[in-house]
Structure formats: structure tokens, C-alpha cells
Length: 284
Image (cartoon, rainbow, N blue to C red; front, side, top):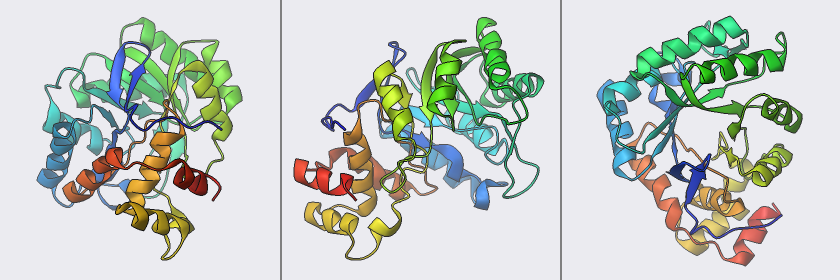
């Protein structure tokens, strides 16, 4: 495994869209359990505006967050969108109730989902549309093919995948260019290491969701806490710094409903892990 300087804080998606590598995940601007309205809509919109003020230009959302509420709030807070701001959304999961996430990769459903996102985000084209999760009831190639057709129609600029294997990524690349993969990945869960390595080889953006699941490493006197004390940083900042140092294609998107936590997370870009600290964390 190689490491890269944290100073490389920008990634060029598809060779045409430079983004700051630390983005913002807009899942948590919704209600508890990613369901319903947030407790304070104005505060949620203030968090989104502050993210852009801090230089973040990659905001990740999905039609299933709320459902539909995260996308609506993004448009209310940020439309018309600043030049260079990449709003990435996802489709392919239904939310029939709180705590329920049901894959739906039927082409007709994905077409309807995309059109709903276009309307809520107030755009004519989604610049990065990601297939949220493969549906075991629908051939993967059919789902990706539907998005490829929507791209031909000019309704999608770039296509990404989420929750996929290396085999699925390879299959999708035979159909349409893939510019991003969003899988669960963090210090304590590296099950998608092979997918990340495939993204490195193809220069595809790898967006780790749940980037701050530091788990046991964050317990008092544990390794992450020790490194954080050494650097006068928070455990979350160290976890993000480790991700930024893992690969130049890694684009963490920590989410929060708090401006204070947003600003704290953003300062992770200034945390400099020594080679020895990075290796200690990497061996955890």
C-alpha cells in the first residue's frame, strides 16, 4: 500500500472537474434516521452554505435522503449554484419507511428517480449521478445501461457507482465511463480495499461513505486518541487525515448537521501525519 502527501488536496474528476478532496455529505441535514424534515430547516441550509464558504465544492446527496428532503434543501440553500460546485446525487434506493432502504434498479424506476432529482435540484442535467446500490432482482448491466442512455440524452454528465464490487465496476466500465465509486471505507472497515485499488489504477474518484466510523480506535487511550493527542487534533480530524493520505483518489465526504463540526472536519486538511503515525494507524 502506498501513501501520498496530504498536500495534494484536489482531484480532477474525469479530467475536467477539479474538486477539493474533502467534500460534504448531505445525508445528515435531514431528520433523525435520515427520515423527514430536519429539526431546523434554516440551520440545515446554513450548514450547506457554510460548506461552500469554506471552499468545499463537492456535495454528495441522494433522492433517498429524507426521502427527497436533502436535495430540496440543497436547492433552497445554494441555487443558483456557484461555478465549479459539483452536486452529486444518487438513485436506486426506495424509502418506504424510517430505517428501510430497498434497492430498485429497474430502468423505469431509475429514469423516474433521475427526473425527480432534476426537478428538486433545479437543473437540466445532473453533473454526477451515482447508482446507489445494485438490485439483486435486476441485472446490473440493465441498470447501468439505463443510466448510460440518460447520459446520451444529456440528462447526466458523469456516472458513478455506489456499493459495488470490482467485478461490477469492471462490468459497468464496459458500458459507460465511470468517474466515481462510493463504497463504505474507513480506518476500521477496509473491506473495499480492492475496489479502492481498482479506482487508483483507473484514476476514478473513490468516495468513502461513513468515513468517521472510527469505532474502537476512538475509545479513550486507544490508538486514534493517542495520535490525536500527539497532534493536538480531534480523533475525527486524524481519521480524515488518514483517508486523505491513503490515496490521491480518495474523496472523503464527512456529513454533519452542525456548523461547528463542519468547520472542525474541514480543518483536517491541515493535520499532518508523520510517516510513523500514518503507519501506526494503518496497521490498526
